[in-house]
Amino acid sequence: SLAGKTAVITGSNSGIGLGIARELARAGADVVLNSFTDSAEDHALAASIGAEFGVTARYICADMSKGDDCRALIEQAGACDILVNNAGIQHVASVDEFPTAKWDAIIAINLTSAFHTTAAALPKMRAAGWGRVINIASAHGLTASPYKSAYVAAKHGIVGFSKVVALETAEEPITCNSVCPGYVLTPLVESQIPDQMKTHSMSREEVIKKVMLDRQPSRAFATVEQMGGTVVFLCSDYAAQITGTAISVDGGWTAL
Ligand code: NAD
Image 1 (tube, rainbow, N blue to C red):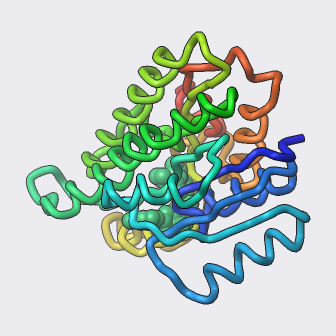
Image 2 (image 1 turned 180 degrees about the vertical axis):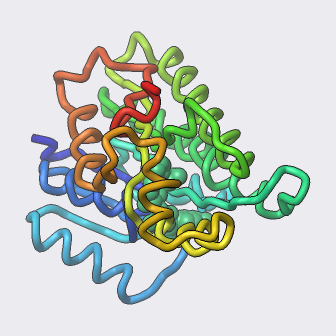
């Protein structure tokens, strides 16, 4: 059980982050949810997880594109035994047409935020004598696709960053790994479908089967519960010697 541990999950009011927060709470951890909004629904979502699983669940607003916000999130969380860097955005365009502002935002949110949160969390993990840093990378942290230059660069970057944190903490009871999901049907993926339909002149079903799941040999989306379960496993004692690695949950994508 993760009772007594506090988990901070960035970008967790939706999609994979929310699924991870729910599975960590189910395993007994107190959870801190996060996004850049500060609505009544955000706080109600945390309250509902707390009530459902009998843990302390809070929501803290912080914009993961800003370094100071990243560090403030960890400070405001108080304890941070488990850090899940999950916040991420996507933009699809060829390199020569890629908007600079999108490039900068993707690198900031998908990569640099993990540097700031990890830097702020490691002293807390050392003081507590235990810690887990889990970075949600992607199959695009290990392989590439056209038109996703910033995303692929950021995800390859976070796989590398995870290895460095693992080496710097190797002799301590702290591990750092990345999880590399294949396609998971979340709002992030849902929002790519209309563009892909236009690009390929295909129906929604064709885009899902022929474009998105073309690279995923299982021909099925992975689920947010499976991502949460993988994170819970990495927090368990079974995984104490798993550090500096990337765990693919991608239906065979990176085996191709
Ligand atoms: P999503 O859009 O459903 O969720 C993204 C989360 O990040 C949301 O909670 C959003 O509010 C938050 N977020 C965005 N910008 C933020 C900011 N500036 N500050 C704080 N929070 C911010 O997407 P998802 O599919 O759940 O993606 C979650 C992570 O998983 C991302 O890092 C993504 O790259 C990765 N991933 C997703 C898939 C997939 O198929 N869905 C596959 C591989 C990797």
